[in-house]
Every structure is written in C-alpha cells, then in structure tokens.
Image 1 (tube, helix red, strand yellow):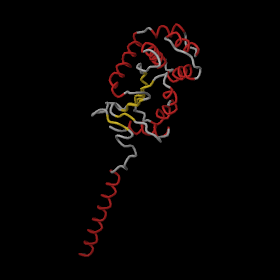
Image 2 (tube, one colour; image 1 turned 180 degrees about the vertical axis):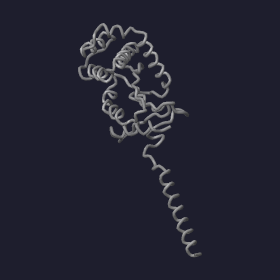
Image 3 (spheres, helix red, strand yellow; image 1 turned 60 degrees about the vertical axis):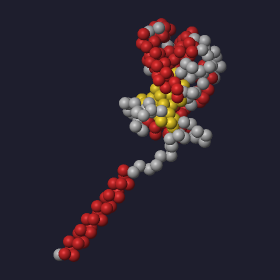
Image 4 (cartoon, one colour; image 1 turned 45 degrees about the vertical axis):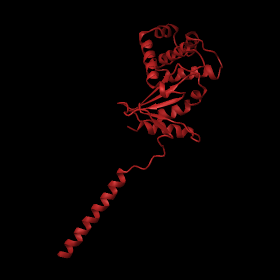
Length: 217
C-alpha cells in the first residue's frame, strides 16, 4: 500500500511538472523578427483606444502610388476591429498646399460616396499614368465626372460643411504627427508605432510588419 501511494505521488508530481512546462510554453510567445529601432519606432507612451493604421500619403508621390498594392495587402490582412485610414498630406513640394487640400477634399468626397478606392485609383492614374496636371478642384471634378459621378452632386459635396469639416480633421491629424512625418508614405499604427522600411524588405514584409504592429498595445 505504501509503495502504491509513493507511485501515485510520483505520478502526480510528474503530471504537474508536465502541465507546468506545457503552460509555460504556451504563455511564452516566440521572439518577433521585427525589432524596435530597426523596423519600427515608438513615438508615444500610450496606444490609441481603438486599433488603427494611418497611412500618410500624397497623390503626387510616386512611392505612394507604388505602395498601393502593399496597402491592399494590409487592408486584407488586418483584423476586422482595426481601422485603416488614408491621410492625405499637404506639405509636399510637388504643388501648393491649396492644391493638395483640394485633392484631400476629392479623397473625402470619394470616401463619403463609398467610392474611395475607385476614385483614389483614378486620381493616381491621372497624375502618374496620364501625366496630367492638377491645378485645383476643376481637374479633380472632371476625374469624378469621367467616373459617372453627377456634377451637381460633386459640387454640392465639395462645398458642404461635412467635407470641409472632414478636411479640417484630416489636417489636424497631420499636425498631430507632423514631427514624425519627414516624408511619405508613412504608416503610424495605433497612435504609438511608426513603421520603418529598411533595405531588403519585400512588399510582403512591409505588409506583415504593419499588420503585426496593429496587434501591439
């Protein structure tokens, strides 16, 4: 009987040790290949209340245009509770801030119409493929009309309080992160992390990094 008790006690001890090792293995996550200071910077002590990816970009920026396939990957791979939003900047030297703000309004009109991706693509194409000049709202208006948008609807939205208020919000977001925006494209994730693209990273790597950052607190 004593031997049986000893065997049972030994079995229980080994079982507990095995469970402890298994639990420890489950709790310790594998080290990430993304390193602070190399692949991302921490720009704030606290993260945003809701997970979000902000892409600061310019329609005139050729790198932003080439990043569009990466942006699509990010949108497909982020969790459903993560918000992705483009923020159009107005400090690039390609054209004046006023013309850049007009392009921002065009983006916001497209977003309000649930045609953001279609209209963003059309504006990018107009600048980088057709090599056409945008001097303000008239050319942007024609891009929308070419996509079948009613001219009266565009004019009404372009001058509306809603779009002008959204423009202010867009530019306030720029000012919030301006010290971290030396150029575009630029990804700020959860209000805390700034993705860093380093030599040797592929398109898949960039998308994976941004998606990984969106999961960090």
